Length: 422
Image (tube, rainbow, N blue to C red):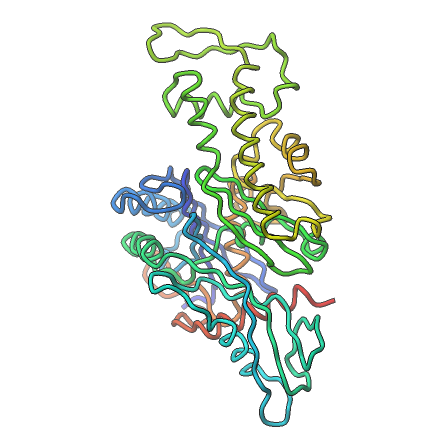
């Protein structure tokens, strides 16, 4: 039996499914040993709309990653997005028993108290993330474990999702032969690979613009203060290009990537390219500035919706670190410049860095969520994603593979606390 410890991540997006397998090293570090990517099918705006097509696309990506790594995936951390995701901030209060020293049980009880909010029967809690703690009226406590006190309060960010949507995606994953170890909200996963600790502390917006959705997470004082999923993305730009130039969707996507620009003023009006629209037997010339007009208009709409969401959160004045863009759409020429002008905030485009292993296959902002899932999995100190070797023997190492949700929650709490520690 080998002592190799492995983790796996499945990013199920609207445009692609990406599966990563990594060997877990010391100090929560890892080396990527398997990558599988397939074109996404059966999903729309992050939601499963065709079970058979979705599980086929997932299975293709899983099998590709398994061939690359030489291991079979048994369990994985899986991304989740969609407009069905909602979030609310809640407050929990408990008394400290015994010798008035705050224990793990006290923290768990405080989080349970924060969780005691009215949730419709068709929704389920996805994440409970502690923002900060208050001990006997003293605010700003980042980790109260071991402190003396009589009253413990917690401000928690609670993220919920539609139960049927979660179950449908879980069923597709399981039909592909993989058990979902934990669902992780897309913007939380992508922020794991794109943000710096300084940005989290100062105040920053993590914005993952994918094909079907724009996933938003606001971090202030090191913690998540607001999350949202906007039902717009790169596919909306592609659809506009398709209609404007009268092209098939696949051709419009190629044109958008090759010739698209989000800032019309930076495009030479004399530049042209060739396309063959519907009804034309031969290719015709199209002005690149005409294409830029179409792209810019839709991109501005995306940023307008993002700005409205940031203002709706009430934290728009607490974001000196600005906006960090990830997702495949952020690759578009002129996208960052347009974002800077539209949002009135500093903007940078981020992609995963400091990786080991098959680095060349996961370069680019479109892989932020996939790599972020691995980062999330690597920090789960009490459990890990089980995999088995293709030759049949177990590779469980020393980690448990059972369903220990309470321990996993505690692992997440310790992670947030360690990140907040001065």
